[in-house]
Length: 166
Image (cartoon, rainbow, N blue to C red; front, side, top):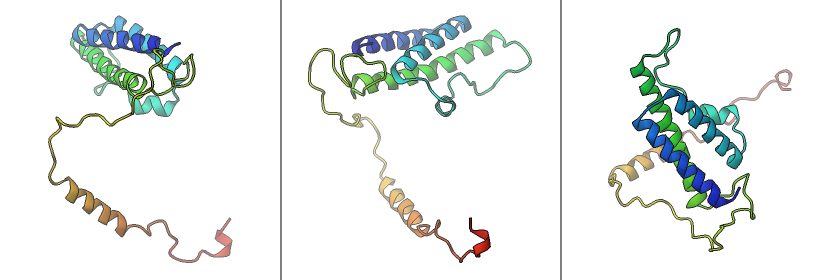
């Protein structure tokens, strides 16, 4: 798979995720999840349980057990899962497109750009629209001071008897 193919397929999946949020369908969600999982697996390798648990994709906050979901519950579930997975796909697209991160299924060399252009310098996202937090420096200093007070937390306090050491 080339970088351009991965970018195009990821964009298609993001568009479909947005359509699912607007017009939820459980059957379409299940197919879309399988397609997006297949693409992410091709690009990033299979995910272990830790990563799946971290993403919590497909785990609604209010799980319905022991009965079929109502149409309202099903729509809310589809919207929630589609929103979560679409956000994960957007992060994946940003990593491949803007940050030029290499991926497992890449052809044409690690981190290669199909157009042959040199890689742009990776810069942090523009934060110009974010509100300034005047107390951030003070809170950061307080957190550093608190951490310093616990610097010796992991050190041994008393000698251990020989019998207890293994």
